[in-house]
Length: 168
Image (cartoon, rainbow, N blue to C red; front, side):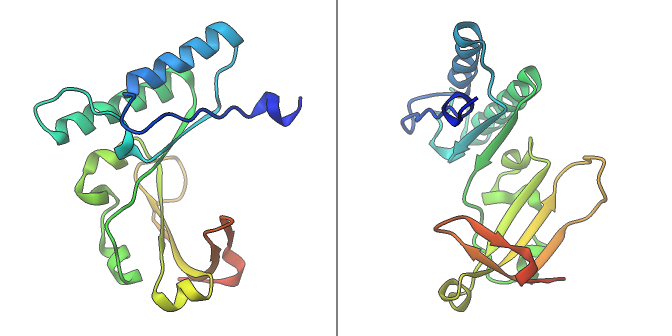
């Protein structure tokens, strides 16, 4: 199969679709094309239309539960991107719970891991970053977070090289 048969991209305008609409798109793709994606990428979570709820927290919790149900139903990975709380140092990041991403525990709900990049002004100028992998649930792997200081990170190309950094 060629790349065009394996890769399908769908742009969804910000604020126009709820999580239930994403599920319906997957169902239609399954019925019409016999295609179920392996991965659904949502960039950014906060650009999804929120369902009616008493407050923002309740709406986000409902959305995360719906995304988790989609992942389980179709046996697919769902990747969410969301800007997290700005942290200045590796010590700040180590002290921060993965559950307080932007003040909301619901965003980390379906994640097995959260990836964080911290960059000082000096690091930004040199394509460097501190990289953290935070574990949010038991995935059967070794427990604990992984920290890598001063790795090579080019955000323009998404190139990452952990070998050029130092494990802490």
